[in-house]
Image 1 (cartoon, rainbow, N blue to C red):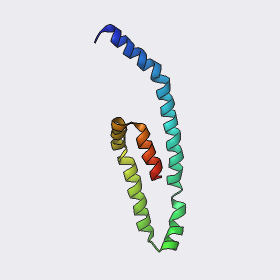
Image 2: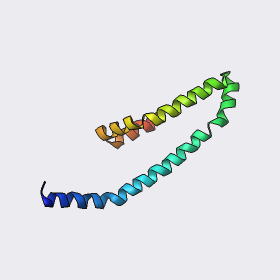
Image 3: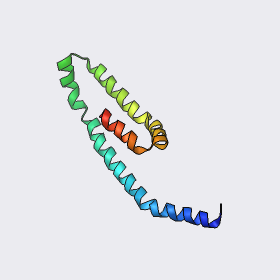
Image 4: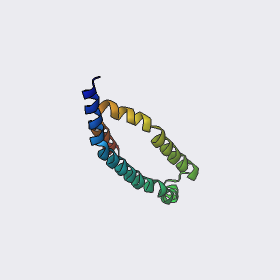
Length: 97
């Protein structure tokens, strides 16, 4: 790699730095908004148990599986974003929601 290519690559990275910080900030805000839904889960356990006759332990097991999958699939989701790009992944996520 020549010095000019290295300089061009360095300039390109420094130009994108503020945008990366913005992405990080927005990502943290989004995670804070989603976390509230997780904490609100306990409000729905009793009504679901009464309405459907499910045991509270079974409802909490479903929630535990949800949290574990949500957490441990993140590296795989990042791999998919690297392969196909963020737009298709966000679109599929939106459809699933």
